[in-house]
Length: 63
Image (cartoon, rainbow, N blue to C red; front, side, top):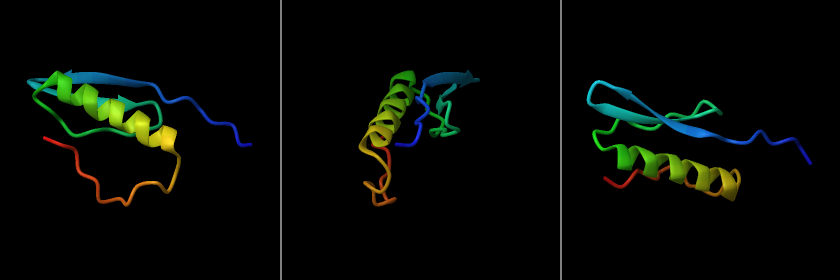
């Protein structure tokens, strides 16, 4: 079994926008609502937990 690095997410603010980021290099879209940036991070972690190849690549974040 390959070694899997744990994903750790955080949010960063720049001006009036907040962005979710992960230690794997993933970055979500800039959001005005911190809660939406946190939701983006939660979705990323859920996708990672589901494993590769489970998404169609056409998913868009819910606004």
